[in-house]
Length: 140
Image 1 (cartoon, rainbow, N blue to C red):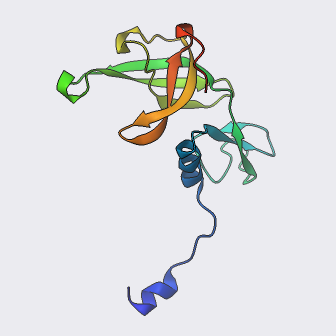
Image 2 (image 1 turned 120 degrees about the vertical axis):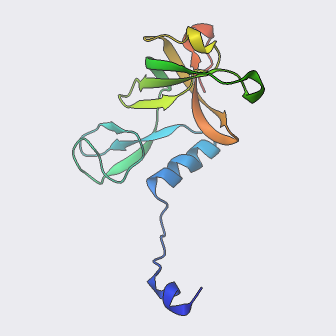
């Protein structure tokens, strides 16, 4: 890299919110942000609270409990892994996130289904996945 290019690059000492979230998942921890000013939980990781605009966000563990808001089945050939669901999950703490319910057939995921989170893998990357609560207590 040319010397003039090196001088224009700022060193970032603290990881950004997405990197922190991903590092937590890599350690097997599902954590989201909470605003210190308004108390609201925040997801997707960001620099500012989208409720009040504050930059006073902290990382907190969540209950892992949620409810399926919506679900859709993605169809693919069995040799490519077969069908799976993509679901919107409302966390007990308030935020809604996109994930998968992994322990039931994709067609069996229903709106209002109670689910619990755990950290698993999707495409060799850590991700938050959900179990059908009725299948037993599999909370992390």
